[in-house]
Image 1 (cartoon, rainbow, N blue to C red):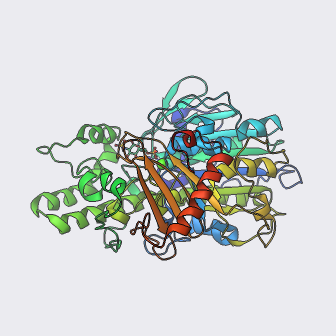
Image 2 (tube, rainbow, N blue to C red; image 1 turned 60 degrees about the vertical axis):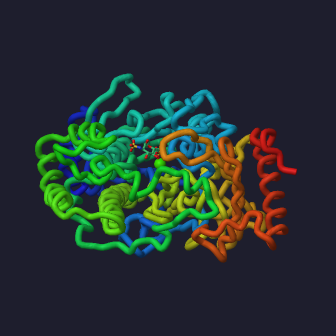
Image 3 (tube, rainbow, N blue to C red; image 1 turned 135 degrees about the vertical axis):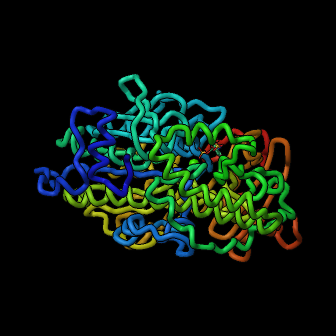
Length: 534
Ligand code: SGN
Ligand code: CA
């Protein structure tokens, strides 16, 4: 079967199902076949790797408490690490639309996974690159409802995609099923395009979009046994009572209350029924007999113990937390290995000198902070997203970049890198000035705007918008609620103490209101007509 533990053979076997004309080569097999001209001065290439729900707490270059991610760390070590990287709307489709267009959700029209359809006729960075002679390709999660535009080559997952034996929608107009584990297969397709399919005389932008580490955290068979002997520290806010934060209290993303014992925690039992049991059965129903046997062999002893040794209260909540952490990490491990395959390919083909390599996620995620999984909120864990880059020759910045950046900045960055003028209606700022030298530019933004729209919906996170500067965050939850929150991120990094309306905060509230008003004007968010700020 396909897995990243057996890369060379997976390339031969896994890709054979898709029957591409040319077989891919393994990440090590081609080191002698360097492409003439690959290093010559020509427009720089872009490899953009984005995962789903991979949070910075689960990358050892950001946080050493949990997992080691040597390949992702290699990008940070040899390149740059953004220490204040954020999204504009912490949800998959909206995040992808912001990234492609360089615009906030209200401008690109994709407000919510559940209600929006991406207008593929609008300008996006792949289209601008294509017009300038780039080859563009995307493999993996798309999640924008309409089919991709602006790509010479694409192969995407239907909706959220499948971890095992996944379906791919192809630009030929059909849907194919590949055999193996999704993270490895997306990587195979990407490497195959680099090696066999693209026009090597042209610069390229390759977008690799993984489903990993999305719910419900189904690991590759070779990683199932990992992390089982480790007990992870429970976050200090795990038992948050949400005092002073009614929107936080109303959410449905609690590890203890909302994780499904079968779908999420994999405690399958014939006599137990849960809301998402059917969904779980169809997920594991995709496995072949060997995959399923490995999966069952791993989980059955845990299932037996779970139903025999009944836990309750805190003990049960923390048992769920440990299971969640372990399953999530197994999926990260395969992702890290597969990112390593891409880096190895680029290195072995001498392509790192003229390629910008970006690693990020569509948003951050809660790993038990506030008792939660999922994202959506403007609170730190989910507004943040990891962002590390390997820089081509000519961009000399190394180490940490502390300026506040956002996913609307990627499109203008890629255009400037390619020598294309950034159109005026793009709302993000090119990161190129930050990547060029040792010092940041004199002028950088001092706050970021955020707006989350998907409510009513799964996880019951209320609509909200807000502004964050390097010290404070001001948020307004609206729609069926009217609640303001203000946090001092220096004194209260966990955002437990809502200062809004408290004596002594008048001045900072006025200052942040002013920033919020200015951001809504600058980005032209129509919400300001419904909730005008005086
Ligand atoms: C699915 C998940 C949710 C998740 C959304 C959005 N439920 O609906 O937990 O918040 O995706 O995630 S599941 O039962 O289908 O797993 S996103 O990253 O795609 O925006
Ligand atoms: Ca996501």
